[in-house]
Amino acid sequence: MKSFENYITVSENLLRLLEEKQFEGKKAVVNNGIRINKFIEKESSDQLKNKFKINEDDFVFGVIARFHPIKNHENIIRAFAKFNNDNKNSKLLLLGDGESKDRIKELIVELNLEKEVILGGFVENVGDYLKICDCTIIASYSEGGAPPLAMLESAAMEIPVITTKVGDLENIINFNNGILIKSQGEKDIYISMLEAYDKGENLKVLGHNIKNLVLKEFTMSRFWQKYHNFYKEILKDKH
Image (cartoon, rainbow, N blue to C red; front, side, top):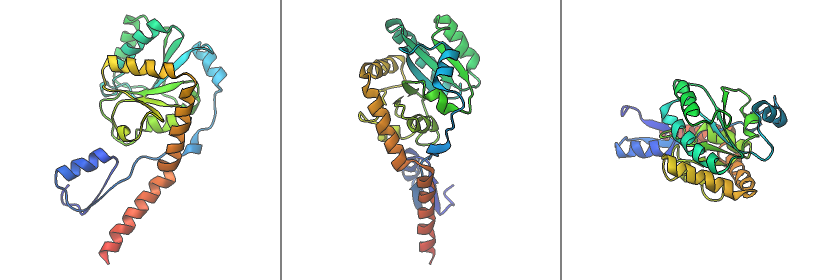
């Protein structure tokens, strides 16, 4: 890789890695982007709540992630079990599919959460499902792109995120627009769940703020503009 003259990375963390390894040449970070207007309603919130037996006063956590150990579903579910024990009007909606799904199903049964944890499967109209959530959770051990698509999709629907420090989110999420989890451990996830629940109506403020940030920094037009600017800079040096 050191034979290349220029480098584009998807995160600040990868940029730092290149610098630590003493890669020479121009470098730029081009973060993930999202088309805010890509979400078209296919199912209403009332339809989905009826489908999943979610009551109007239920507090709903959402997780958008493939079922893989790196996404940390087990600790999320264990943390939710403790949260639900104290707050019966709560649900956990898991969207996605993957290799560890059978293990997740077993854990849900072990913890007697069959009625509280909803397996929504892989869905294309993710925006409809996000609208029935009060907040989403990203508790991954690692993320490839920055920010993770799950965060961008959640923010596009004005749903705040509880997240670990992955995918540059430690530089994006703060007390004004979300909640940072101290670690990937069950206890810290549980504490952050409580923090979100205790915010009540203020969660909507966090959701509004994170959407505004995405509109400013992480749209697809911003994504293409960053590429365009870096290419122009490279070509300028050639002349």
